[in-house]
Image (tube, rainbow, N blue to C red; front, side, top):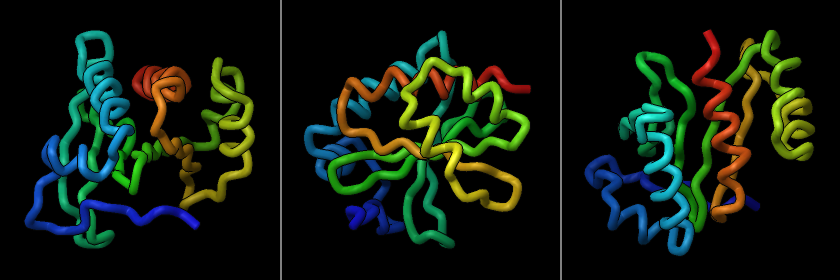
Length: 141
C-alpha cells in the first residue's frame, strides 16, 4: 500500500520546514534535486500551488512556459510525474536510464493521450535517471 500523500492543508505553504518534516532523510535528496534543476544548466522553476481537485499542494516544474513534471510529497519520499505522448516512445526507449523505468513506462496506462512516467525518490542514487528524463523533456519541442 502506498504511503499517504502529504501537504493537504491549503493554508500551510510547503516551506522547507514542512517539507523536511514530511520527507525526513529524503529532504536532502529533494534539496539536491531542486538545486540542480534550478541551476543555469537546467533553468527550471518550481511553482507550488494548492489544487482543489486533488486537495493537495503540488510543485509544477516549468521550463520557459512548458510544464516538465509535477512534484508531490509523500511520507518519506517525493514523486515526480512526467507525461509523454506516443510519439516519444521510441526516443524514451533509447534513453540511458534504468530498464525497470522503461518497462514500467511501457506498461503504464494512458491518461487520455498521455503516458505517465512516475519516479518515487528518496535516495541520491535515483537522481541520475530522473535528471536524464528532465533533460530529455526540456529538449522536446
